[in-house]
Amino acid sequence: MGSADKIIRLILAVVFAALYFTGNVTGVLGYVLLVLAAVFVLTSLVGFCPLYAIVGLSTCPTTERR
Image: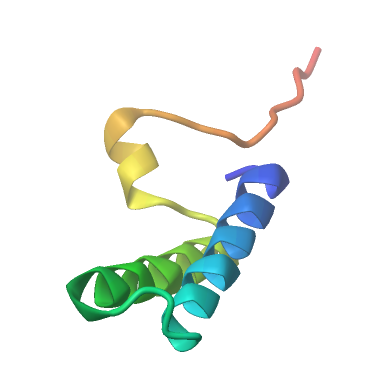
């Protein structure tokens, strides 16, 4: 996972948590956003997204060796 992807996930996690804890989003949608925020933080810290592995997507820049 690339650094830009990690930063975007962390920003989204903060926004989702803020929406939940300020009471702007409540009920089931609030809980879903809170779980998504936790998943985004966890995958950002670990640097691995299982969904990306299933799909075969990589946002990590690679350098060519010659």
